[in-house]
Length: 69
Image 1 (cartoon, rainbow, N blue to C red):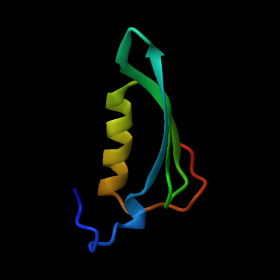
Image 2 (cartoon, helix red, strand yellow):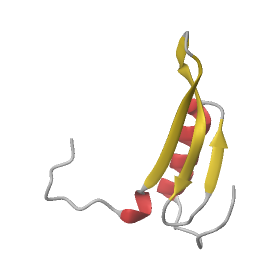
Image 3 (cartoon, rainbow, N blue to C red):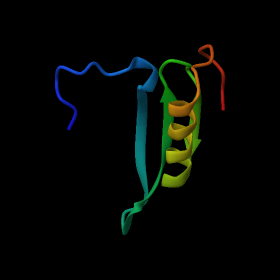
C-alpha cells in the first residue's frame, strides 16, 4: 500500500473498464483502458494486452490527449 502522504503521479493514472469473457473463467478479461494524461484508449482482449498498454505509458512521456492506440 502506498503511504497516504506520497502524492500519486497523474501521468500514471488510468481508467479501466473490465468485463469477463466467460463466467466460468473469470481470469479471461476484456475491456477498455484510457490513459488519463494522453487520452489514449485501448480495447483489450487479454490481461497481457492490458499490462502492455500500462507498461508503455509508465515508461514513456505523455503524448497529447486524443491519440487513439
